[in-house]
Image 1 (cartoon, rainbow, N blue to C red):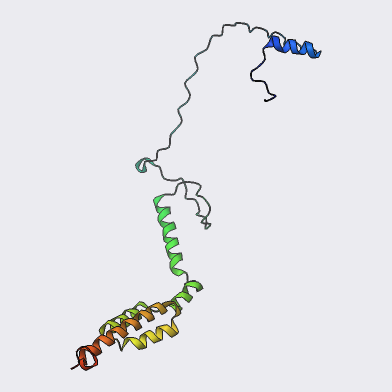
Image 2: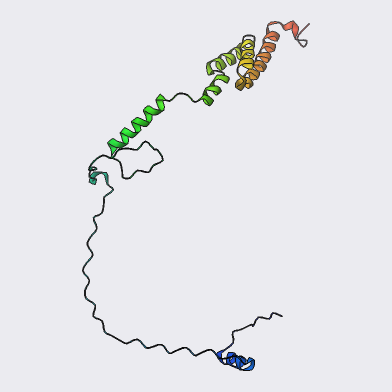
Length: 180
């Protein structure tokens, strides 16, 4: 059974417990003074001044008083809304900056170890056409372009199957099923 009471004690029960335990009773709270009833006459308040609301419609906007210099820090938030002319100028500067940048070394390295798409198309066409011409291209890709070695493997396998089918077609005596 829990030592906590199951219900709240009433004021009489608390007073009786204090007497039994010989505890002094708490001071009775001082009576609160009753508020005086004073009739207040409310004066009519003047209507608040209407705030000037800034319109977000493009046709109702007024041009900026003077253009603010655009910071080069791209993480800085704009202090005000830019006009269309300012936005175009920022876009133009950004586009020109992107064009003038050199290719990063990491991307340049990936381009160097990857086979050119024209080389891949030529290799696959030769592999499907007859097979023999695809082997030198597949060998070059396998040795020089490690990122495209899977293409070299595909070309070699397709070329091998195409060479076998071609050989069986042109030399029927190689096929034991048709040899007589």
